[in-house]
Image 1 (cartoon, rainbow, N blue to C red):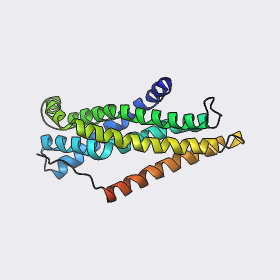
Image 2 (cartoon, rainbow, N blue to C red; image 1 turned 180 degrees about the vertical axis):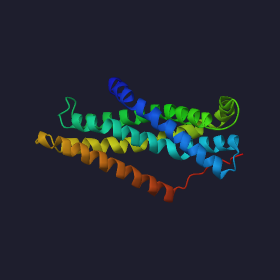
Image 3 (spheres, rainbow, N blue to C red; image 1 turned 90 degrees about the vertical axis):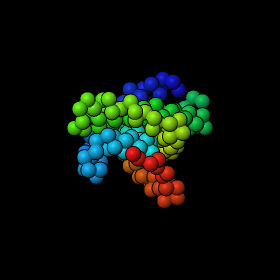
Image 4 (cartoon, rainbow, N blue to C red; image 1 turned 135 degrees about the vertical axis):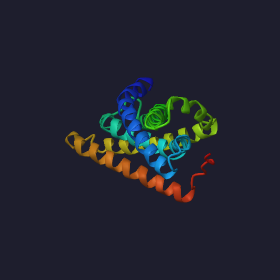
Length: 204
């Protein structure tokens, strides 16, 4: 289990850092325009958006892109400890992996966002924002991402088991699992937003 988490982190972290940095730069430019060039306030809004809205979904989608093919391939072969253990272990490791990806994502996005602002010495703007990373906010984000990742891992396992008797279908099952997981996660996010709108802290 630990080895699988390590392997999936190694596969996911590079893409997470690159895309988080690109997202941080894009969002900070958008927020600076919306908030009338107030860079410090824009960084605070960026942190709130990342923690409460963006990070759980983003790390889950990144995990799917990086790890779904491997998960489907593993599920296409019988597990020595049985199907139930295989499914439980797979869902748990996916949840842990996405939880560990969240700090990488937040760090890269905020660093890139700070460097993209026009304020002098932008890195000094970051320490005061750490107060926004309350334990409640981080636990909520971690549980949110973990739940989405567990669903994704279950869908990958289901697709993988379908080709145990027909290994030639593995490429098709990998593609199907990736698309199915992405669509399912987006649908779940939309449903959650409707049923439980996010309660964002005040900015400024």
